[in-house]
Length: 386
Figure 1: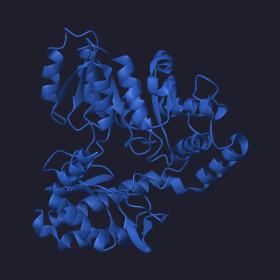
Figure 2 (figure 1 turned 180 degrees about the vertical axis):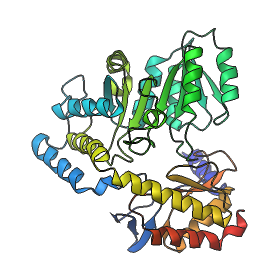
Figure 3 (figure 1 turned 60 degrees about the vertical axis):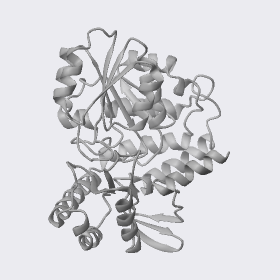
Figure 4 (figure 1 turned 135 degrees about the horizontal axis):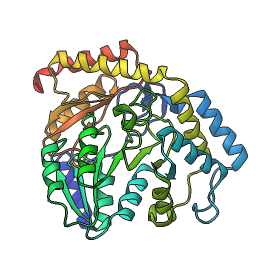
């Protein structure tokens, strides 16, 4: 296995080596590492619901009722009442006919794309789509075309020459996970109708965040009923774990019979299903968390702009601070860490080469004092990255 040692050494040389940081404790917007307290600025727990009393209570109640594990895959004996309730809850939340839950968002994307698309089909993706969407496309065997990020002109050009394919699917994220901008869904939907293409939206970072009621991208743009496939996760703003797909009943029936990541995976632990179901409820009944999140995100972005740092085209709770090289990215992350801020550097392959960044993720629970402190530390090193 000497080749592994050599490849790991090459990663270290290129400043691409990673090790997970072990958190001893997380309390709201703070984490403890090696006994030291740090301000958390990289969590996807946007609304802070993972520590919400109602979600914790739901988890404990489900463990007492069902036990800790589901015991089997969904099509054997792993379909519990709480799973059916969660799928019904997702369908109501997303305003679709039906929904299917998966063990993770990654598994949802793999299962959907690889089961719906095949050789002779065309998948068209935004260049900045998540790795799970790309892997699903590769697994499907369909032809893959990629358009530059948010470039509707190139997307139209690809669609205009796509008539030779049996099926066409446009795949985009709702909120892009590394740039923090929102997909041009109205234009995508219009083109999809004209060129008879399906539309799949990965709403992992938009579910619970976008829209008047937090329902996601479709609600945000007034496109309810216009998106063929809505995928999302419970592990971010919802405060739980797992993924889902929502759409027409015929789509969900088809996926439950053909998506390998659904068929061959042990079903979600009942406590996770109960937490996610309660999280969907809290998102709709306690809108103050979403309001706090947007206020914080707008405030922090405005303050960072005043320092001259580049936040790309972010308009959401994900605020990238562009650094460039791997070395500069690690240096900025290290400087933040030294000053009590936990926000690891993002490097390839998570982002394109030369587009390293600090990906700041705002939470509803962040105080203005905490956000002001982050800006003050960033301002100390502004000159190197402007």
